Length: 425
Ligand code: H79
Image (cartoon, rainbow, N blue to C red; front, side, top):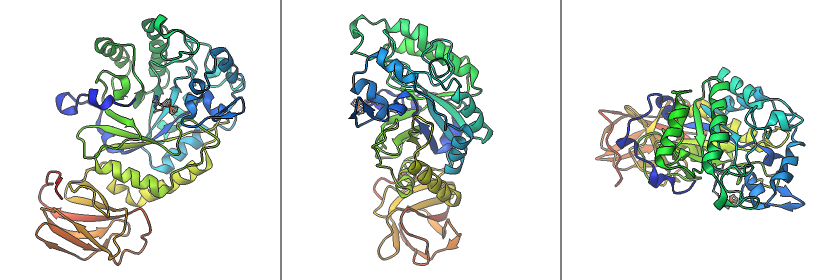
């Protein structure tokens, strides 16, 4: 996953996907890691594991035949597609990506390619991905699948299970041909139009093979966007490393991915959830660089989304209801991060995200080369006094009352065209 950015062609050097605009405008997505690991919840044979719940098979070196038995106990009776989709809607996300198959190799969808899938191997016997694809689409949310295309710890020829199988004896091409590609074809055929196919941790394919792999899948759904972790510098938009925001604005379509606590898959003993203020701050920070934030939650083995994830996602959505104008369809701000916060932009408007309210209530916007014509608080549309001395713009926000922590948004309207990013401001 890490280090992919060096390999990714910048959009300046390649043609953008014709369906990229919805993604650029979306700004906020929901990532969901859900699989057999959710049932294990970070514990194997009485020992607690930390880091990432979906890695427990690897961390505890669980043999495939023992891991198979977890499937026989997987019965997510609390799963409710409408509740999950409605939470996504209430949170204000514009897309959802869920793990159809993670590195553990278990298919959370009805697959004819293997019996190691939720319909054939569990007492649940239903296909939750079908219900979820419909419930999200009904609410106008783009739906997509995460699919671990290379790592598959269940298969003798899949990537990276070194505890059961000898890596040097593996035939990755056979695994791609017999499992990954047929399953991706199922996902691209049986679940309606997919906004995104989210790949991860590439391996075992040359650039030419990766291009052929993409072409073959592309035929089924030309409008689906493929994430850059398909590998070899290919893909339709760039994903940074896990939990990484670039230091300066980046052109083209890209995404930062974070998880709500410290794990992607559910871990019962991980309660380190970000507050809604922290989520909003992260969202504003990523948007200020021109990208999307896809925030992950990890439902448990019964299909319940953790209480704090529900709570803080809803609070984030409530903030977006009032301030979403400064996020959705915005572009990177042309003023870099300041002691008080970050900026996003739309034609004729600069949005000031006040993440740390200045003690004297005076917000200095340095390097503002346009002429400000009006400044107001986005929530309530209240005009604020301001003065401009050359390229220093001072806004007085004393009358902005509701301002605790993140984040009040002040809007600066100005005449003329947007300036270039002013790194020296
Ligand atoms: O799906 C999530 C991760 O499981 C996946 N990408 C995100 C979106 C990912 N695959 N590989 N990696 C991330 C990098 C591997 C990190 C590791 Fe670890 C460090 C594996 C073992 C040590 C993290 C910490 C997982 C277990 C402990």
